[in-house]
Image 1 (cartoon, rainbow, N blue to C red):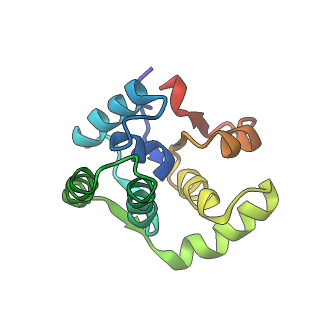
Image 2: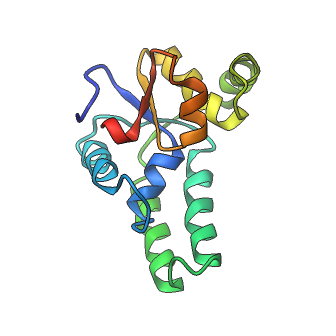
Amino acid sequence: MGTTPNGLIADASAVAKWYLRDEDLITEADRLYADWNAGRWHVVPGHFPFEVVHAIHHARRRQRLAPPVADTAIADFTDLLGATFVEPRFIVQHGARLGTDLGVNFFDACYLRIARKTGYSSITADAAFYRQTQSQPDVRWLGNY
């Protein structure tokens, strides 16, 4: 449990749980949050902040989060954005190919492509993505974190 020694690329499905407290895997997401704050991982694709804010916004629209709670969550997340964003040209070409090869969503494949380029592991809370990629050695399930 806990950190991956050589690094970690967490996708938005895992990070959104920091704010969507009515979901499962909250304890594991809190460990991930602690590792983020300790500087143990900060490499993400350029679309990462948009995906996380979209999840918060979606929860607000579905009335899972009150408007002031959602606004605070977005502000808090924005304050955390000291990440290193990977150049879009790199992930667009290689992420699309990997997504096709694995039969997964392009955005999800981008996290995995960055993990492979950096030698890190990718961690997800997206059950469908994990089921499709669990045979890949560099994909981890948030529930095992």
